[in-house]
Length: 115
Image (cartoon, rainbow, N blue to C red; front, side, top):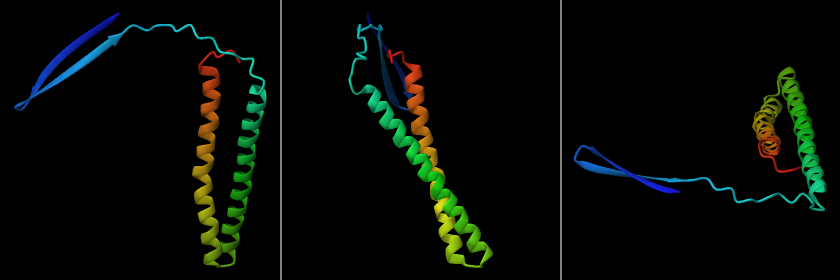
């Protein structure tokens, strides 16, 4: 079913015309093939990479915090600045990794793909 709706309006001395097209949703009848031999391995590899990245980010954040604290205690502005920059960058990187992880978890539960 296809329906076209045209509307127009005037703004000042210009005429704006809008066209809206309505289409009926059609089920394509596609079923997921869960017999891929590498699907479980791919999930394990992707999960391992994400976990490894989170561990590396945590270690780098701990090192950055230690550098910042040591720089503040020893009055070394260069050490404190380096530690602050490390902490400044580990936050957004951890947020991006968390967003990727959340998107993967959401996509697995939002759509019934059979696996």
